[in-house]
Image 1 (tube, rainbow, N blue to C red):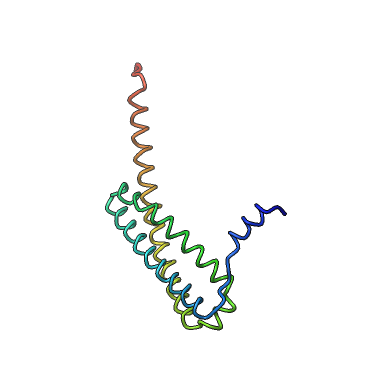
Image 2: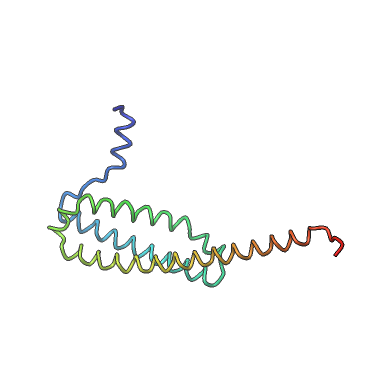
Length: 141
């Protein structure tokens, strides 16, 4: 294995927590990230429902970065799960409950986005069909 491959694997391998304090900090950070991501997703949902798609699209960079942080933290907690379960049982339990709520809100957001996508696709198809119909030469009828 060459040095570049080893460095890449090291970057993608989560570092397990080494202390109870570190576990608590990681769980707190994940709570904070989930809170910020939830606020962003709820704002996106509100904007999409209001038809403000351009404003909703502007939230994408922040949402992507928060999603990245969420993924990094969850991977790290999973890698440390046996240790974290021992040293931060209550915090981990609260995190699981919050995660369940988080998933429900994300599901609602995905439903709103899918609906908006279907509506906009229908509008575009309707407009394209109307333009195609008008572009056809009138024949003898």
